[in-house]
Length: 255
Image 1 (tube, rainbow, N blue to C red):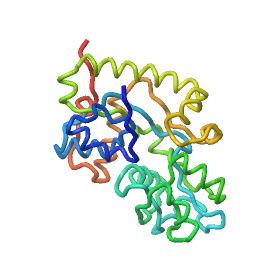
Image 2: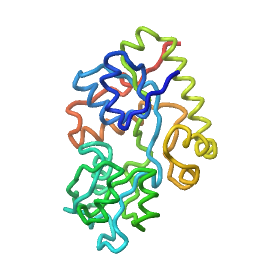
Image 3: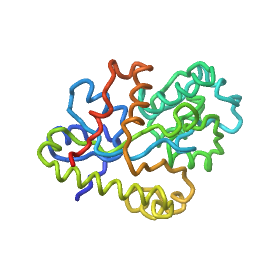
Image 4: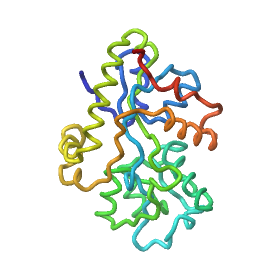
């Protein structure tokens, strides 16, 4: 197996469409569900990768900010990595649950969030790991919302995505890949040390950073019911225009 790193999973879509890659790992589910609905590319989820977990993506403010609680974010400028995607989707749901109004979102790449927060160009940043931990350490940034708060705790975030064409052509390979991922996820779920050891080899995360960051949950078994939660939330916030059948989205090999 050959891995081809990309900064964002959406950047790999053209290669997937043209058969230059067979699977996109860490694929942002919001983007790929939208792609499937639009008919841009017939994608299918081979396996879940990450579910939301405590403090793996937090809303952070400067230490001296007057923003003290979630409702204080109403009307404030909050940086997200991609507009109208998983960060705004989950934060809107969390604020709605708390009876708070929504902020105004600004698109800022994760690596630049610290500088725009420090200069006061935004009031808060919705930072994923390892950037969140770095901002807490370097800027003494303070958490005002845990991204895993209700009602989005444990929400599916990303996974391994392929095309219907690949599955139809190589059903045994697709099934074998799914089994391998399930076994690896089971190890990751039980052994944080194994994850910490692996991260520096595949990312720019240093060993000491791997030991400090908040990790996602790693489901050993993919769940159509959990994908339904995400689809329903996307429908509520109009990121999807129709219901998608999660059982059809999730690849289930014939026995």
